[in-house]
Length: 104
Image 1 (cartoon, rainbow, N blue to C red):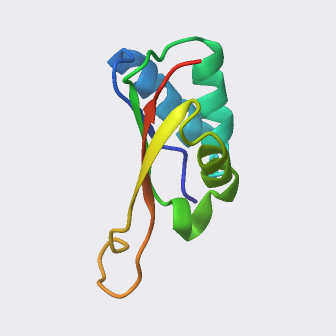
Image 2: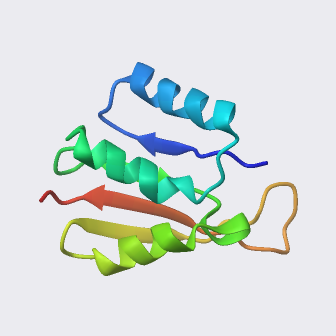
Image 3: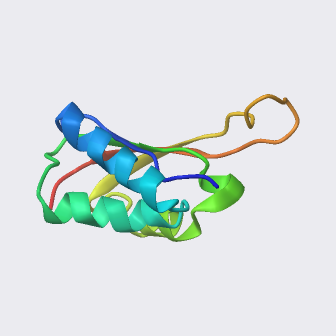
């Protein structure tokens, strides 16, 4: 089962490690992307210019996370969509979102 992986720059490495470990221990799916991002925002760990990267947004998919980023485009986030191939093959494309936090 895939686990939540959120890479957040400018947040202490031990915090990111804790988030990864918690996701692995709970066997969380990618549906946790948005929930974890909201927790990070609630803790005010991000500042304008911080970047959040989410992979596997298309497959297996994180539609709520993508919809949130699209709804917040230009208001709180500036997102670039990258379309790499899925791992270990060259036929199917995935989606990686690279989102810069613009602030409240």
